Image 1: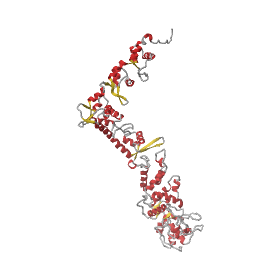
Image 2: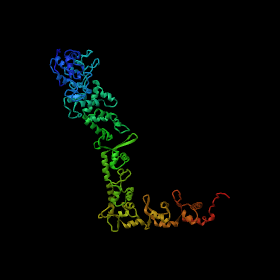
Image 3: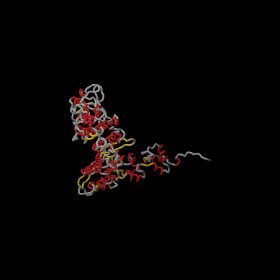
Image 4: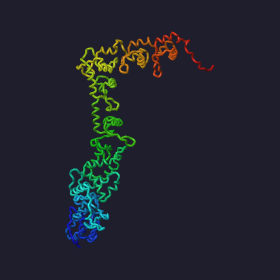
Length: 623
């Protein structure tokens, strides 16, 4: 038996079932069941091999069995699990064979239905810029896969008269993108790095459904209608056709930005695990590598373990953990966290459950190393100046040398910029004149116990003591800055010519503790020069120390003199209405000080005699 109207197939563009549907339509058959039954071809011929010799005879020899077999979606011999699709292969999951797609304009113009319409990601006709249809516009029933082409629906509605819906530019661009891959022409610029049709279809399926608020698994394995698929195609087109910006924007949209947690799951939820599961193929390695670099880069800064699938090296990401940065800088993780908080290191700290995770930009670590290499430690400054580390700290405390913190091994460690040390020395040289014969360098002054280096430098900067500069002297910086020995002697003797002594020496000469000397100076019992708010070193007048026993007396000395206790002395002097110059404070170890004239007046009254001593109270007892 032969059909009346015999037409030639289009092997390069048409599928086998599409060709048979076109033959049935031209011969007026309402379905293909009679044709298939007449030549003993099963309905499963779409995806399963069968004998097509009867079909060739029915067509009158216009084609052969090999040509028809090449048009069918039969299993590939070379690629297991895939179906032949023209010159390439595709997965059965990427074919929509439950219903037939059609373009109303193509039906009206009697165009051949291309086999690429069977792909689930193909939803627009690029020739007419309209959406494809897979249902009747009147009754809404699905168009069967083996429905005769150009015929009416079961509700008598003509498919060719169906109004067309305009397609979006993204859907049309993606259809042309798939057309090029089907013809073996992969994109060269601006699109995702895919080389075959199957890779593109898997990306469309994944990026079309992988977004929050939707069941990913059911959406990924389903084959929706054209209208629903059109929305997924537009979302996937933004990723595939705008590479790599579209992919990076899609990844950013998946980030949850948690307040607590810094892991991949906390940041992106199940998205990355789904990505690894869906795109677990060497063909997607370039895409996976792009994802790795982005999630670990400066935008997201997600720390990953070395064993993680998405782990990248510090050279690729530009960030390191606090532990790694601490090993490089020789600091603890806690110190790294404080440096991040203070701004000395660029990075971020985030709570991760019951603890905090910290990471630092690798270039910030390098800059920190360079800045640390520039600054000087207190030992290096002492070596350059020719003084001790204690004296360097004294210069810093008096704000004579500026320091910086947060760069050393601890946040409290003070370090010094070389320009700050040089500026300090230049100030001294600016106040100095030519060298002098009988002079001593400031380095030697620092080793003297009779004067304080800080006081000498402050006097030089204030212009009270002349300084001298000898450029011929090499060595530490302060070796070339000199002061006259006579001026140093004046510092010890004073402007009045009276020798001076230190607080400790004055206390030893008076037979009391050193804490008493400043109080006696404040009370006017001793005279001394001051350096700011504190007593100057060697500032206590020797003459006032020598005259102190003649003018004043302490409670302890009075008690020894009159063979009584200090308490009795104080009670009798208080009863005699004698006011002390310095009141006692037993908690601080301060003894009362009295004027000798007042004490002699009370002694004349014979108050310290044993007869006037207070009687002891009876404590009671046995017998």
